[in-house]
Image (cartoon, rainbow, N blue to C red; front, side, top):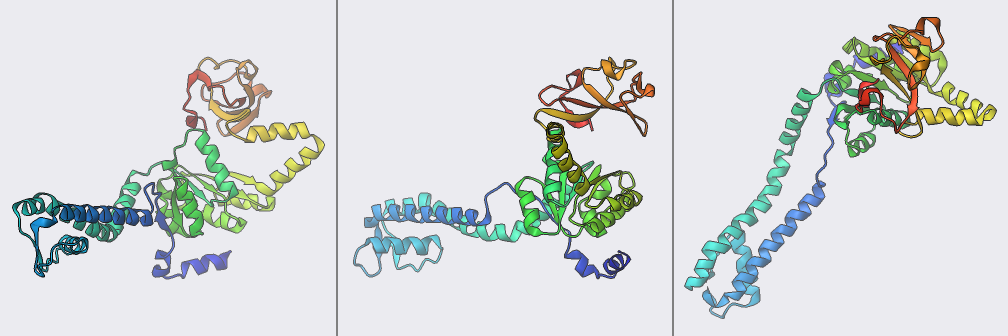
Length: 363
């Protein structure tokens, strides 16, 4: 691990700049579709002009003096709309000149705007993206950073969204560009790069984030990300996942507030499913948000203060008092206080106490 940290520190600034590119979600049409739309609009303008010239072909004079055929009308339209103007075909009658002045000239301007607009859009795309990025950075506060958009990371985000978190307040970090692109498709801002690098976390605005979920594929990566995130933001809430239980104490020492051991938790659930299938089904229902029974943490209401946990409308599992977690039957938790928080089980379809549907406030 020390060798890896040393290697990261020795990288040049140019190499560091190649990592951590911020990719914001886009909800418009793809570039290819935009180009096709512009080409279609240009062809419509072209053929409308050809039709106008062909209808009034008697009012045009050809230098060859052999009349105006349909091909001549197409030829005149193309050189006119492109502002080439060879002068071999000219409007001679008053009606032809009037149509040129009032109709064909605006069509010529529209045709040029369509073609030049495509080029200008390509040239200004970088400036527009930079402007969006600066606006995004200035507006981002108290957001959630998710490191690793794999199964664990996606499940964590879905759980947070079910409690009221908005997509604009989620930033995903992953090393794979296609994964970041998938996150963009879901409406999340993404950062391509290795989250063990401080530059990558800074681009995700970790220093102003409220919480970070660390769910990479490797335990050593979790430790490095935790150390870096805690250094950048001492107040941030860090929840990290590890595969092996023996690495959990190291993560806590690195600054993680909560450590979830995925391998052992899955193993215990498998064992419970063998011994007690019904109990396993209940636990799985509690884990899944938005259906059946939900496990929530919420503050004590004024009506519940001074009462026993057994007298609450919800099924109280634990009482959080300060930094201690008390079982519901602990003598110290016999009388609830307004400063306490409750870990409760309630039906997902039922609103939380006081009719407050802003469930994101109950963390």
